[in-house]
Image (cartoon, rainbow, N blue to C red):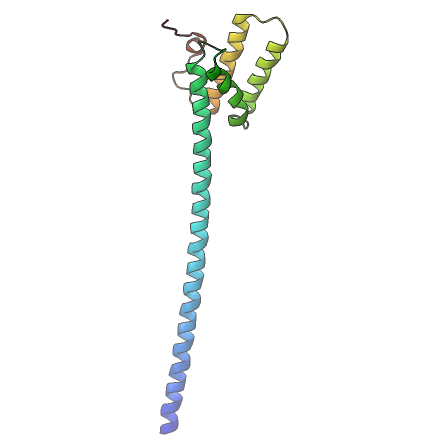
Length: 148
C-alpha cells in the first residue's frame, strides 16, 4: 500500500511537473510573439515619426520660399533655396526642377518671366511632393503680394 501511494505521488509529481513545463513553454512562446509584435510596432512608429519630421522640414522650406518670394535675393529666400537639396533629396521631380532652374541661371541671359516660370515649377513640384494639391493654382504661385 505504501508503494502504491508513493507511486501515485511520483506519477502525480511527474504529471504536475510536465504540465508546469508545458505552461512555461507556452508562456515563453507567447512572450516571444508579443516581443516581436512590440518591436515591429516600435519600428513602424519610429519610421512614421521620421517621415513626419521630413515632411515637416519640407513643408517649412516650402513656406519659407513662398513667404519670401517677393525678395528672391533675401537671406531667408536663399536659405530656403539652399535647403531644398537637403530636404527634398528624395524627390526626383523637385530636384529636376531645381537643376533646370540653376541651368537656366547659368545660361547667361536671364529673363525675369522665364526665371519666375522656373521658380513656379519648383514650387509646384514641392507642393506635389508634399501631396498638397487642393486649391493650389500656379497663377497664385506666380503672383507676389508686396504691401510696401
